[in-house]
Each structure stands twice: as C-alpha cells, then as structure tokens.
Image (cartoon, rainbow, N blue to C red; front, side, top):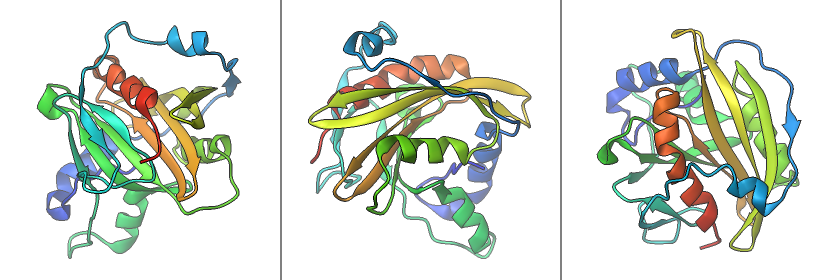
Length: 219
C-alpha cells in the first residue's frame, strides 16, 4: 500500500482511507523506454503553466530536502514527521511511510489550490543505485502498476529519470495515471510522486509536477 499520510498522525483514519483509495492492487505490465530528448519531454506538457508559489527544499523552508524546487501557487508543503499512536501499529506505520528504497519526507497538498491530491517527496539513504534503479524500485513496490514509460531528463545540473504509469485500485476498480521522477544526490536519492483522486484531478495537477521537474536543483 502506498503511503498516504499527513504531517500529524492524529488523522489516522482519513490517512488510511486515502491510502486505500489511491492504492493499486492488480498485476502490472511491461515497461517502455522513451528517447531522452528535450522535445520528448516538452510535448508531454499539459499546455498550462503552473505559476510558482515559492520554493522548498533549502534550509528554512517547510521541507528541508536534498533537492530544491518550486511548488505551484496555493499548494501547501508540510514535512512528514509521523509518530505511531495506540491506534496504529508500528508495522502499519512503516508500510505507510516506506515504498521501495525511499521514505516519505514531505507532502505538498493541492487542496488549498482547489484540487484533490498531493505531490509527495520521498528520500533515501546514500548508496550506489542510480536514478533509474531507484525509480523502478519505487514503482515495483506498488502492486497494480502497469504500462510504465521511463525517460531521462535534466534540470538545474541534475540528471534524473521520470516515469508515467497506470495504477489500478482494488477498492474503486478504476485505473488512473500517475507520474514520478527520481534523482540521486550526494545526500541520497529523491523521488517526487504525483497521484490524485482520479484522472481528471491528475491532469489538473500535472502542471505542478512539471513545474517541480523544470525547477529541480540542489539547494
């Protein structure tokens, strides 16, 4: 189950419900590679540029991270610092907060801007894995993913890999698009993931993901 959690564990029930709604539960399909060219990346843009509402990642911002990037105007970032409670077992917390090689570190909430979804930032320990390996591990850790299309990108002196894939929910019996990207820094790997309640919400929030990718850099 993908981590779907807020900055406070006092809302455990909504968190778990969100995890169920966004989780996937059917076998995946074959991965596809796409040529790594600027034009290939540009043609994926939704046609609407998200205005910047400032940046996060540097010291003193809501989420200090190994990378910095701009967030869309109106979106609200919170560091994820969750402690278990009497109602939530430690193993449940671990499952919610970890996906593949990375751990949930920051949530950027789209609700203040009028959408239902999050841009989530996951971080990991320094190691030898490259960005493609990290991103594949992230996607493969979630059941029900399919038709993953990977491509490389460059931004702010960083070279990374991004992926677009489908995710099928067991509960809703619905398949929707998701996007993620990964880079590797001296402080460890970083994954940015954009989900959304459904395809309509995902499309509406995609410019925020593209803004983050386009402005990604080291702090």
